[in-house]
Length: 494
Image 1: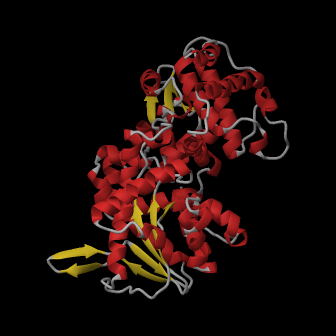
Image 2 (image 1 turned 180 degrees about the vertical axis):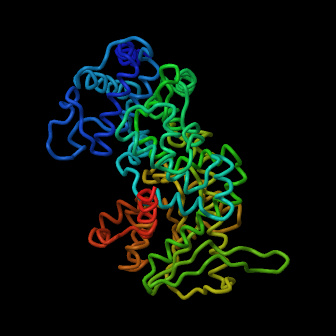
Image 3 (image 1 turned 60 degrees about the vertical axis):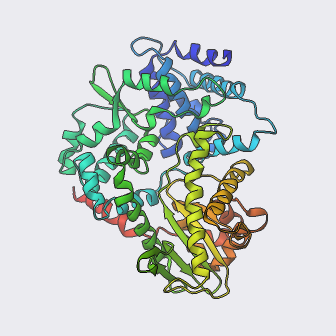
């Protein structure tokens, strides 16, 4: 398509390292508040830290880095000397996005879903909650052994090494290859195996980027291999650069999942799934100040054919939550493609199967088959808590999932009317850690009733909480403050 040529041709005149360093300055400025150098000062004429006024965003810098890797000159080329040069490229990038795809009334909701997957994680940032979840889950018995198999380091060493690398790259665009050995004086261990796992050479990175791109309406959303390898060896291996430290932050938190899956996919069900379930139980315990009754998973049914209850039941005087905890990392296809197709539908089938599983056990529970929890006439709200945020807030996506859930209920012999009486909600772990604290203050049903009936069906938890319970949301606190204090203490001791 002709619309891709202007940006491509403009990038070809620039030196790759210089362009990536400009992106490094700008992305660090937005996400971490670092100062801009004089030649890029004009990018932010505002004294306050309001990134929404800048006119350019992290997800655009992410795409620009991807295109720079493809098209900039790796050896020669012009140096970036002024903000106006980057601004001109970003304007061409925006124009390319607009020309590659024009939203219509038929696809606007599907487009909104793709926009959410591209932008929301940048808007939310990577906080201590994500880092805490990583440390607690990967320390789970059995899981720490898998981490050691993958990295040759313990979970705590991976966390410390990743944090040290991030802190370094927030201040420096490049490090030398002997940085792991130099950092070992501080860390008291060598984190080279971790750094190597995050690093690639420019030639294979370019090839992987070329293989992944789509010169069509999916251009803006296609996967950038920088997400897998945020560190790049350049100049015959004499330096290792990190064009976007925010990608490194995401890679050493939620992104560790892909290393585990690539090493031993069976470890996910054997260790990481139970670790996630246990972690969410810890969340419920910390959030409970006396108003909740918490029921863990139990066995029930006939001795020859026992069943498992839902993972967790949280009950107060207003309602019960039936919480099923699932890793369910969303495949890239569901974030990229515009219209439902086989690659997208297959991703949602996994989620529909999990929802059907909850309804099957809910039916047994309401018939009195559970050993501990018994029906009491109060509302019961099924909730599926996932690692990823599936961003299920558009009519197109909700319609696809509802259709698949209906078919799953048919397969299990469950009446579809249960979707009206006990509407499911899908929520990511980050949002649910906030929501459970708000529920403790205002009551489970006060939060859940609008999410399961009426106009807010399909809303994201974060938006619902901000809209309906802003005062309660302000009182939400980190549930594991000791994780941060002990981690920082470990760093200071080193």
